[in-house]
Every structure is written in structure tokens, then in C-alpha cells.
Image (cartoon, rainbow, N blue to C red; front, side, top):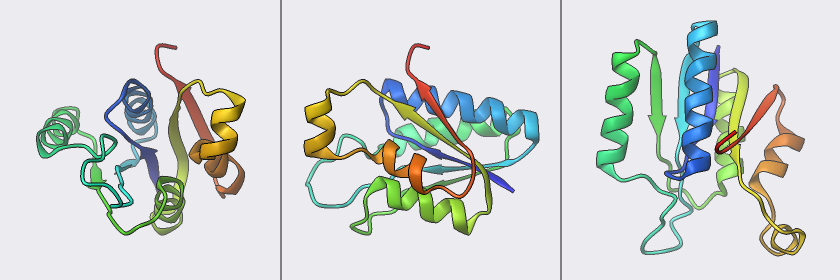
Length: 131
């Protein structure tokens, strides 16, 4: 079994990652980190750079956590990548980070968190940054 975490290099992503690490340690589960990009922009600030991934991998190695870091660029939304990984790796839990958005922002941009919460076939833990 695995714990899936949707990761982006932001405060929300770090909060989700920290909690996912805690959950993986408690259950001795493999941690699958999803950091995806649709690939529709030259620069995607949500896509972690090689040095960020290297530091993340070193941290997980130090903490003795079995892990897999995936950075798909297949034109899919982040929510779809997380949900696909949850099915493929038989997730026992999905961990996501949340940020405050206005109702209009949610209407215009949609909500990856909402899609994951509604469509996941396993429990989802939503973590707020700074909480």
C-alpha cells in the first residue's frame, strides 16, 4: 500500500509533504510524490526543479522512507495525475495541501482539491499551510 501526496513547491505543498511523511512513517507505507505539469507553459512554478527534487529525495532517504517521486508532463490536470497514481499504487491515503481561494476564483479556475476529494476511492487528508 502507498500514500500519495500531491506536491508543489509552495507552503501548501510543503505542509502536505510534511504530513504525508508523518503518515508514511506511522504506517510504514511507501510514499508516492506527484509533482506534475500540464506542459502548457514555458515556465510552470508548480513544477519542482531538479535541485528541489534532489533535496526532497535526500530527506526521505535520511528518514528511511520508501518513496517514489513522479513528475509527469502529459497534459493532464494535477488532480487527474494524483487520482491515477492513487489507483495505480493502491493508495491507502491521499494527502493534499490547501490554500484559501475566493468563491469566484474557485468558479473560474476550478479546484483540484475538490476534484480529488470527490473522486478519490480512498481517504483524503487535506492540510492547510501553517496549520
